[in-house]
Image 1 (cartoon, rainbow, N blue to C red):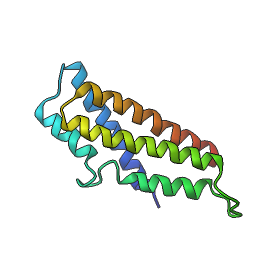
Image 2 (image 1 turned 60 degrees about the horizontal axis):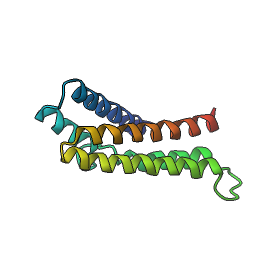
Image 3 (image 1 turned 90 degrees about the horizontal axis):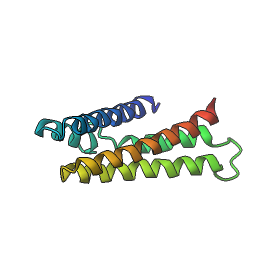
Image 4 (image 1 turned 90 degrees about the vertical axis):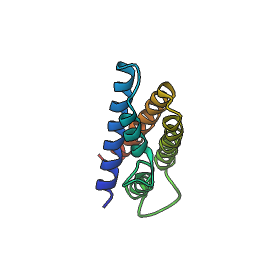
Amino acid sequence: KYAFSIQLGASEFQQLGGLLRKGVENNGLSEKDWNAAGKLVDGGYEQGMPAPMVDVALFATQMLMSLNYSGPLRELLVSRYYINKTEFATKELAIAIDKLDLNTALGLWDFGKDSWNSYLSIVNRAIS
C-alpha cells in the first residue's frame, strides 16, 4: 500500500545526494543541477520528498502497533522521531538549495540520510 511512495521518496533522496556530491567534486553545481535538486525537495512538484513522510509514518504505525493496542510502543515513538528529523532535514535542504549553499545542503542531506537509515533499521528489525 505504501511501498511505491516510500520507495520513490528514498530514490529521490538518493538522487539528491548524488547531485550534491557531484557538486562537491566539481567545486559547485550548474544551474541545471541546482534546479534538479530544488525539484527533488519541492513537495509541490510531482512527488517531492516531503510527501512520502506521511506514508512512512502510516507504514510504521501499521507495522509497529499491536492489534491489542495498549499504547504506542517505544519503537513506534522512536521511528516517528526519525521521520520528523528526516522531514526537518528535507525542509531545511530546500532552503539551503534555494540559497545555493552546497556545503549546508550536503550536511543536511547527510543528517537526513542518517535519520532515514535509523528509521529503516527500527522498522526492519520489528517486522523481520
